Length: 346
Image (tube, rainbow, N blue to C red; front, side):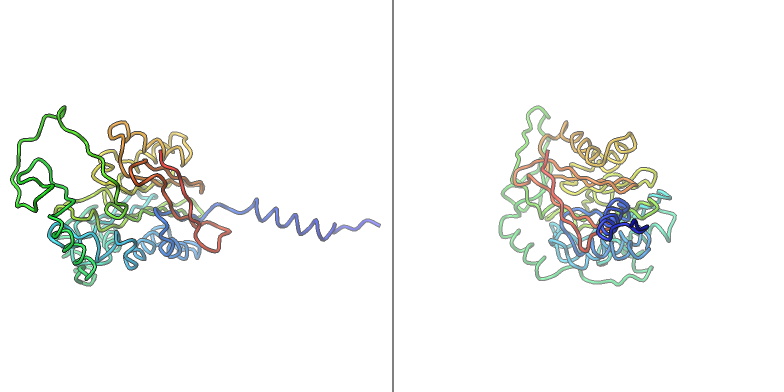
């Protein structure tokens, strides 16, 4: 006799298949490097119905607290004077509004200050001491960003005759001396040489994050303490709109990490989003943005993550000495913890 319910085994299999194929790829969190605690913090906000902006802020702030790899937050990457300063930005892909800070002093929560710039001013970007004073007026706590670790890094650098550093075309020879320096006439471009050194993965780094909610609202953000032993006042790519990250909820988002002084010249995050707008999938969009830089700088340390508004994502990186693969972190539906993914560099 035939029944109306079907086989219990078939019903279970059908339910399992339905769960697999009906599982939405959204919401989604993707961030540079396997900074899993940051990914988890962002996912907790997003999966409970919070906004992508809240998720990005929470995720980047977690990395600031954790001092991820010593390249995010306080106590890392001291500049030539031994001080740690912070850069951060956050972007709303619905409104295209951005808040950014650079060379932020004495304030630990750089991503929070960046959001305050976006939500409590008509400006987009604040820098230096004035950015710190703004942060204090918004209720952020003034604290020393120097730690025993950063002091040790700085002392070791001084003992090594200030090597490596970012000076060029100066006297005395910056490869052997701590200065003070005076300018020399630059060599003609045809006579200059590019010396590629092994990449220090901890000297140019950042967390870049993309969050997409169930409706396709995209937000991105970055936070970093910049390049180790940078010249005081230096600003890298991380807080630069379109360089460190970019978001457009009609398309998707992207975020970059690596040698900011090279990458910022090409606005790779903006380029990657535009590549997706033109129909490229996220992986191809990232690859094209990297390849565009390589036409001018064949060897550099850098990587990009991309995600579109429907939940597809990908990444690409530029092969450099000591850097042949790039790892990044993803949290998506159906996972009980962040997924670490890897891509081979171009």
